[in-house]
Image (cartoon, rainbow, N blue to C red; front, side, top):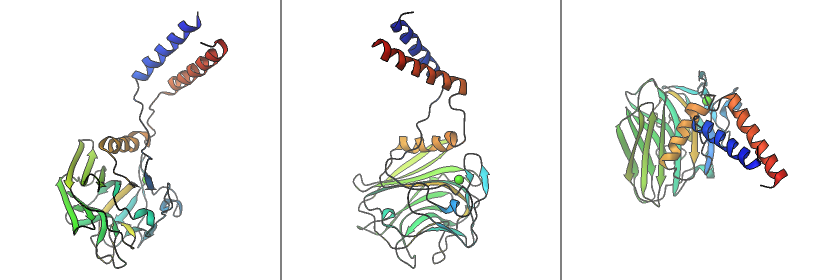
Length: 276
Ligand SMILES: [Ca+2]
């Protein structure tokens, strides 16, 4: 068989098999600042697996095993427990940011801070945050040009179920956008907001804060913070990453992946040897 014929055959087989299998794009890393997964022992589970913003479990917050894709998750009881990450310059966003989290709320009957960065030591207000305002997803951005923005979604939060939520903000585009993705699909809605985000000196907390209460009851996991506003396709890419890739789903069956790798090696070898 001539080399070009062999090459054409290998290429056809690769295209044929690749088209029959979903290949996911991996996770979004451009602009990623911090990533909390809550997996491992007491020390490991509090660490920032991408950046340097390690946290701590406060008042008995725990990280029980939940399901395969999440492994362990942060659990807070809705009374006093929370997870706290100290103030850091790279968490003080000004012109753009994204926060993504997976949540399984166990109670949506009140006003609960899921994740927020607080402005001052006493925690009387927040620089940015995600709130469960009953079953509405509330976005908070405290801008230098006005008061605290509190924009709420339609009722999209679902009690006792895992779902991905996200907030993106771009001062350049003057857009604050809410996302909720679950098996029913993606909800997103944008709000017109102006101004840079105010910078505070207090921690980021997951689940509430003693000085302001707003205790959230339930699970939080796969929290990522970016220094730019991700677009809808990237938010969906993160959803797929957690749903399918972290679940160890066999994206490409093992014999096929060996075949594809082998084909590639043979092709490179033949190409080098015969200069075609
Ligand atoms: Ca986890």
